[in-house]
Image (tube, rainbow, N blue to C red; front, top):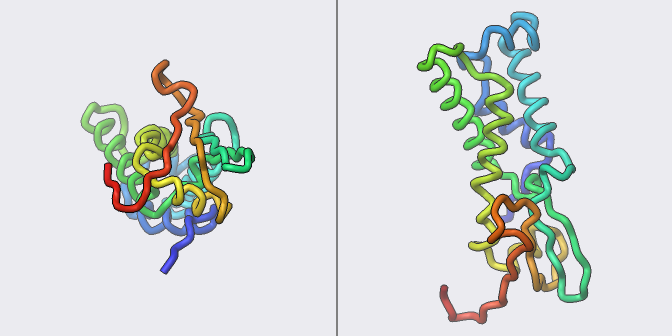
Length: 176
């Protein structure tokens, strides 16, 4: 059974499973976004978070894949979104809110916590190309049948990762 990666609408539905009006929310956000209604606030927070997550801009570029025929394709972090990733984003945001509360800097989850959690989750997933089979990249990107010969990371913080990494095809029976 193949489960597709969530699009914007599906991501919003997944967020709504983990981010509810019963959670402690930042009071100012409840007033500003929801007019005092926690459920409206959560909906606005989810919309803003999903918009941030699914932006197609420089900051959200993840990989450039080169196919055997020479075609290149840019893949964004959104192309690798999953329910588990969304759950982790909400979990990170809750943790940020708890730390802020302990430090006496305000109570409750904020939209900024969710956005910061997206960035941290994306940063953690930068190593994904090292652990994934090139054939899986073809399935993710939708170009079935085209062999991926090179993957270049598009966000590099250090000199050693700049310029990308190639992925070699490993024959069946060989393990890393």
